[in-house]
Image (tube, rainbow, N blue to C red; front, side):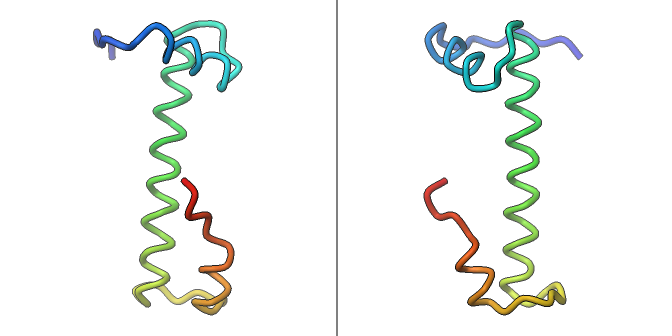
Length: 70
């Protein structure tokens, strides 16, 4: 699907460098995919922490592996 968005030129340039993509649309696509993947991981970890999902690790082990610097 095509859309038009306004993105700061410096931010877009930084995004291209971070993703290693030369094309702007490819860099934006990669960033959207990564954002969605991280959100899904956060949801899964939250469900495990809240006990809604049976998982073999303890809460302490999960919390130790969780990166709060995101």
